[in-house]
Length: 515
Image 1 (tube, rainbow, N blue to C red):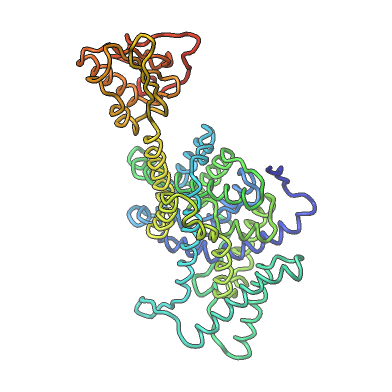
Image 2: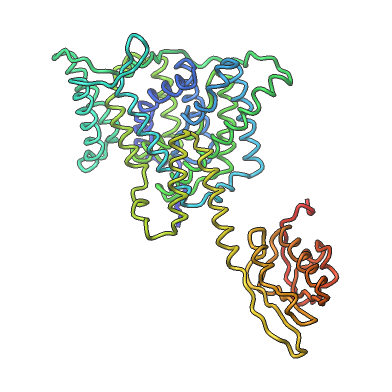
C-alpha cells in the first residue's frame, strides 16, 4: 500500500532543510559541467538549476524530487547553441515548457505506466553508469595546449583518499547519528581536511573553483533576443519537442523511482505541468532548461528530504551560493563531490538485476541491457527508453502471436466448426490463416470467435481474406460471436456473420476508420 504524501510536517522540516543544503552543494559542479557541455557560460547552468529547481519543487507532482540543469538536456541543445547562439536556446526552452504544460493538461503523463520493468531497470542501470563515467573526467587535468591527461602521483593518491573518506562517512555515519545528513557531513569534513592539508603541508588539491567561477547575480528577466516570426519557430520547434520529451521521460521515470524509494505516490500529470512552467520561466530568466535529476533526487531522499521544502531549500541555497558565498563553495574539493556521486552510483544501480539471469525470460534481460548500453553510448535517456519500449512491444506481440489456435469439431449437421482461441491482431494474422484448410473442409464451415478477440484493422483484413479463400473453394463460411463493431468493419465477410444479440461480445477495435 502507498502512504499518503506528507508535505513538510514539523518533524521533517530539519531534514528537509539540511538535505536541501546537501543537494545544493552537489548541484554546483554538475550545473557548471552541464553548461560547459552545452557550450554555455557556467552561470546559465546555475540559473537553470535555481529556477527549474525552485518552481518544480513548488508546483510539481513529486515532493522530494530535485530538478535542475541536466546532462540529457545539455546534449540535445549543444548543436542549437553552436549554430544559432544562446538566445535561440532560451526561445526553445520557453517553447519546450509550453509543450510540457500541454502534455500535463491532456493528462498524457499516465503513459509512463507503459514503460515495462526491464526498461526501467535498464534506465537506472544505464544512468548509474553515465554518472560514474562522468566522474572520471575529474581525474584528468587540462594541459596548456588544451589536451587532457590523467592525474598521477600524489595528486591521484590524495584524490583517492578523499573519495574513500567521503564514501566511508556517507556509509557509516548514519549508524552513529542521524542528526546531520551524512552526505553534508562528508562534504564539510572533506573540505576542512583538504584546507588543512593545503595550508600546513602545502599540498595542491583541486576544488570547484578550478572548473569555473560560480559568482553571479539574481537571474535577470530577459526575453529571448530573437525575431518573433515563422523562421525562428522552424529553428527552435524541433529542438523544443526533443527537449520536452527528454525532460518528461527522465522526470517521470525519476518520479517512479522516488515513488519506490519512499513507498508513496506522485502525480505524473501535475509533474508535467510543473516541469513545463519551470522551463518556460527559465527561458525568460537566462536558463538552459532542465528536468528532474536522478542523482540529486536520490541524495535528497537518502539525506531525509521528503517534502517540497527540501527542493525549495536546495534552490534558495544555490542562489545564496551564486550571489554571496561563491568563494566559499569554490573551496569544496572536487574529490569530495566525486565521492558523493560514487555513492549515488551505488545507490542508483539495481544490483538485484545481476541476479536475474536464468530467472526471467532472456528477452527481458536483452531489453534491460540494450537500454543501459544505449543510455551510456548515446547519453540520450529518451532514446534509450523509447527503444526499450519498442523492443518490449515487439516481444509482447511476438509471444502473443503464437497463442492463437483452434479446436475443431463436427456439429450435428455434419459441418466443420473451428473454435478460435487467443487474440487476433497484426502479429497473429499469419498464424491465423494457417489454421484453416478450405479445400479439405466440409461445404459449410463455421468459425466461432467466442474465445477470441479481434483487436485491430489487420485482424479485420485477415477475416475478409479468409472469407475470400472459402469463396474460391466454393465453400460457405459462417462467422459467429463477432462484436457488432467487427461486423460493421468487415467488407467481404460482413454478410457471413450470424448475429446473436445475447451472446455476441461488445468491445472496441483499434481501426483507423474509426478516427
